[in-house]
Amino acid sequence: MKKKMRFWLDGPYLIWTAAFIIIPLLMIVYYGLTDKNGAFTFHNVMEMGTPERLKALVLSLLLSLLATAICLLMAYPLALILNKMKTGATGFITTIFIIPMWMNSLLRILAWQTLLERNGVINQFLGMLHLPKLYIINTPYAIALGMIYDFLPFMLLPIYNALQKIDVNVVNAAYDLGANRFQTFWKVIFPLSLPGVISGITMVFVPALTTFVISDFLGGSKVLLIGNVIEQQFTQVGNWNVGSGLSLVLMIFILISMAIMQHYDKDMGEETTSL
Amino acid sequence: MFFCDLTNREPVTSLRIARQPQILDSEGFELRKLLSRVYLIFIFILLYAPIAVLIVLSFNNSRTRAKWGGFTMKWYVSMFQDEVVMAALFNTLLVAVLSALIATVLGLMASVSLLAMKRKARNVILSMLNIPMLNAEIVTGISLMLIFIAVGQFLSRWGYMIEFGFGTVLIGHITFNIPYTVLSIMPKLRQINISTYEAALDLGASRWLAFRKIILPDIMPGVLSGFMLAFTLSLDDFVITHFTKGPGFDTLSTKIYTEVRKGIKPEMYALSTLLFVSVLVLLLIFGRGNRKKSMTGLVRI
Image 1 (cartoon, rainbow over the protein chains, first blue to last red):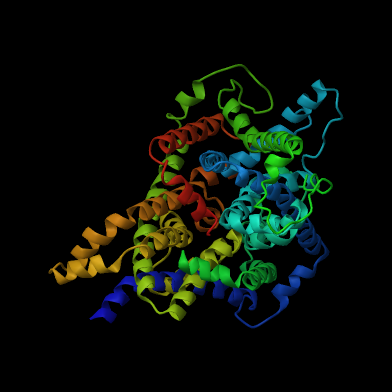
Image 2 (image 1 turned 180 degrees about the vertical axis):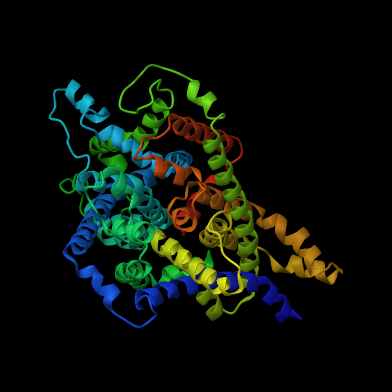
């Protein structure tokens, strides 16, 4: 009786997961490793080797690593500042970081065009102050800026949550035992916040590596990222086999970053369970 | 910043009570406070500049966003007459409500059964839950597109077909929403005292009645915040919709994406500003308690 009941409860979810998550991912593997007639081939994966695509892949890796690093450098001090605030203020301040997400994300990225253009808002402002102007629209720098803007909250929130969980007594004990501010940070606070940092890194790196919208809007179709290459294969060229083959290469990088995350927070999984 | 009390530190004695460094070196404290204020304002400007731009553009009396043609409210009127924009809005809202609803029901069922599971089975399910959250959206979108194509080809032997449009987009949205609803509901469910539920059963209540009367009221905040989170994610989604939609079916996001090349209709700015403001107002009225929950759900911790 009980077993039957349980099947009815988790059955729909399990069937859904199998049908729309597991099997579709296997479809990518299938399409990626076969040709149009269904014969096994590595040709689609090797398509990544063309100079143009390799360039897109390398650029994507560089930009997403850069964006992740800058996000981390910006978000960590921010999380420390927010963490110091009184609890009432934190609720308010963290809401401030959520509110922008309610504006359509495509339009928010698009707004950066207006901000960064040759005669855009930023340049007019710089002109008023007689400062040198900024010409980065339609370059990889604009794309990196867009990534940082779009994904900063994903870095901030996990770090902030990790800092919130640190027991104040542990920090006080460090001071009590004679550690200075720097030592306390480096030996106590930072290691304890590491799960948040790692989770933040993957939450920024994966979407930054695979984006095609940000590069479309801020790269002015001059700069191709690997996301654009794959997107075009599916929506314009219509070659699903090559598209899947290229996706397989991309998935290797995603898997690596997932594996790093799994490795670093063994107890994180436990936490998700105990949630 | 972290070095300022290196020099004037007193020697360590075992009797010393926990030191409060902020109070001791007040000058460094003031400077730090100032620096962190400046930094917060900088981040604030970075986050809100694009939104300010969009709101200003929605009042711009000029069809291009390149120049300012004076203040107008006309886009706020004309958007209601634009059938294409209204259809996209309708599709967006319909998909968001339905996918959030179905994902919440499925997530609730999965959470209840997860609670009763053995640890090992639960960990397997939980790591499956992680897949759509950790995976790249483009990969999820492509994989869904491929499965719909494959099933469509399979069904075509019997004369059936799969039409890319509302149905496929809805399935896609439910798929990426389920994990977030489970992660919102699970913590509430774990706090439940199972004895009250068992007591209700002992007193003759059916399982369903006991669940409805005892468990559901307690986990309601989690269920609601799961629903809200799913609704928000669906409302804002572009990538999954892009790959699972067909020609002739558009949500606001996909409409904006196709319009970018030829210039965004000013009505889009007006509509998005209106949506943004209404969500904000709703949030201020209802969401006070749930806000933090949905935020933590978003970062899956």
